[in-house]
Image (cartoon, rainbow, N blue to C red; front, side, top):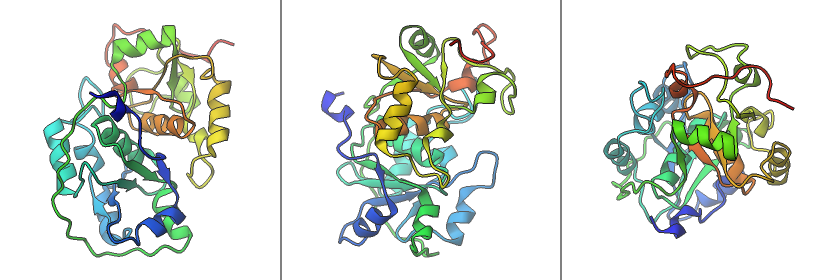
Length: 287
């Protein structure tokens, strides 16, 4: 793919205040509601109960991930399925897209990452999601918009992607962040996968430390300082993994806000830990 597509044309996030202005123009960005809660209720009923005006619902687990299996709980989706879902939601290659979720930001970040990886240059996440919108007095509606079919065709490769071997190599030669909670990294608990611990050489960097109490990202300078303290200033390559490639996408987005490009290991711990031949480390990181 052309190198020019790898660089986003816009800031990767947009505030609720900025969205209030952009949504009022004659042809606003396509707005996707991707609300999703791991292990929780489906997002569609929440969308039907109230969403941002003009938003189209897209299911995170069927559009932005494939069926769970040996390659992880949220592997890459079939590109034909993903492309059809995006066109059905009105996504066009030459028109901006804004995505939001309930406020945690993980699902929105996965949608952002998928669209960017698949070649769309103008994608942003509504910082703080629906919660930020309603907190500033933004209206919600139950009206479902009629949107024209889009023309977006995925062209993968615009963002760097890691497989298990690539993640292992990056942990040795560069910097591989583990975006899960610290207790999962250390192997003290493991609520989802059969094996507890982390990829040897990975550095613990919980993605929830990238946001404020309301789920909005820390300022770019604060994020840059955080990642620099964790080794990003010296690293020539940075990668991220999590449990299944969802919260890891959130950390890749936080790194992008800080101006640091990073690769995502989509299979993440759910894939790594399913292979008994892969080494597992436990305990705090050295130093």
